[in-house]
Image (cartoon, rainbow, N blue to C red; front, side, top):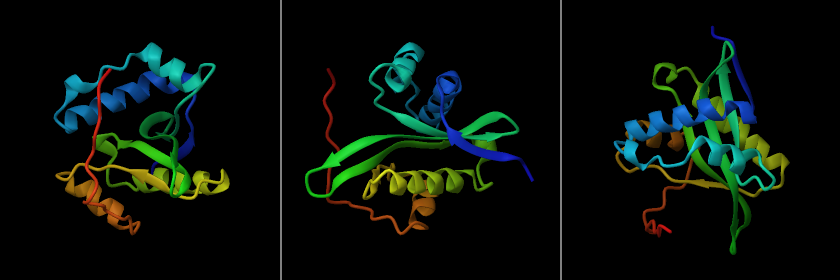
Length: 150
């Protein structure tokens, strides 16, 4: 059995976090969409006004997974966590690391006073959809994603 540790991310983890983000983008067939720089990631996560946090999963001291999150406020539901990405490097999938990360993030949200968590999953990502179904997640087909670039 591997020695798996879940902990809060720190500034020094950002290069590896960015590597995992790029790995996910490649899996999602959109590597060109990753435009964030390491400097921006560090500043936005650990600068004067952090806007994101993350849990990392380490196996024998090497980061193999992340759960990157931030605050979201719903006018109907109040304070919620937004799970931006749950990533486990391909070679480590199927070992329960994603479950450990998500369970720990849910526990974190409860202790910090959030009343729920929201996230997105691509409709073709069947392994992720099946994973989230184990949590009795509500899949809402009614809402359409909307974004604008600046």
